[in-house]
Image 1 (tube, one colour):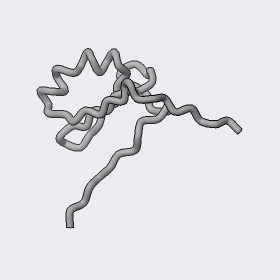
Image 2: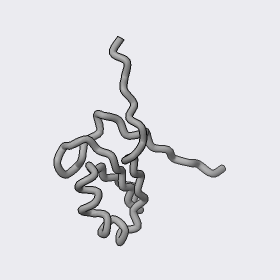
Image 3: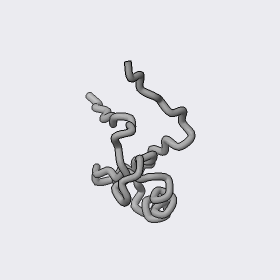
Length: 70
């Protein structure tokens, strides 16, 4: 049986591992670890993440979901 692991969607509670801003990019490393980045730090580290063959989940440009406070 083939098992597929899925990761939770990024939420407003997810923070950039470098600066604490809202995370919009998840980088999953081949070893299984993951890093979360704001747009600025995702751009800054994109070349190295590519060298590491990281899988990138980029949520920039997706519609924001606003929680109903009722």
